[in-house]
Picture 1 (cartoon, rainbow over the protein chains, first blue to last red):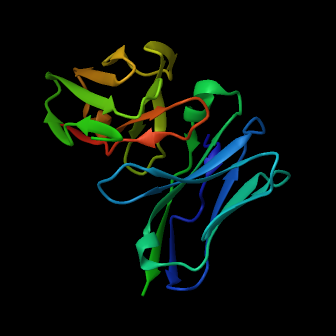
Picture 2: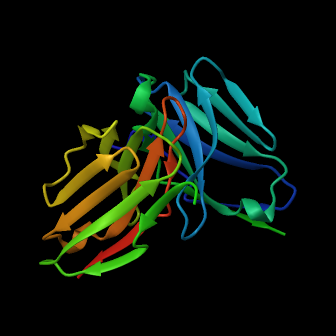
Length: 116
Length: 111
């Protein structure tokens, strides 16, 4: 059973508008959440993270929101740019320190396409 | 060279072959990982090494054999694989609470 789910396989957005990518999880032990971005023929690259003690974390155009009671997080990209077109993965881990930060459970990914 | 480097980028092997995937990290990290991404499935953790010691084997079949001679190098030895083992194999490294840094992966095809 998948513990991290990204129910939208793809999302298409106009340049300059907001992109909202969603992620749901089932394991209540998850305490730390990350978003990774992947371009074709490259490995995933870290984008932004959030700890369960927060409900929002912002980094430039990227904001992650966490709703613990709903076991839901979302990534907002404002404004969206064509270079943001990539696959976005949500990931989670129990916050036990050390290598637990690397033992991630990933969602299936959402393909974001930003049209000029 | 910086980051996490994986070789080869592409590999085609028969079911009776023996091959190895190589990963090298230039980030000074102490932990290294193997992840697998099969078609239409999420990335799945395979192995974790911390200071050269294996700390996690995520129920991976014995036809996959990892080796970590030092904190900078990680290998995945492959033997008698099955066609369903065809996938993208990703190496990653991390240090303490830093996020994972991934390599670009090896695209493996088993014929």
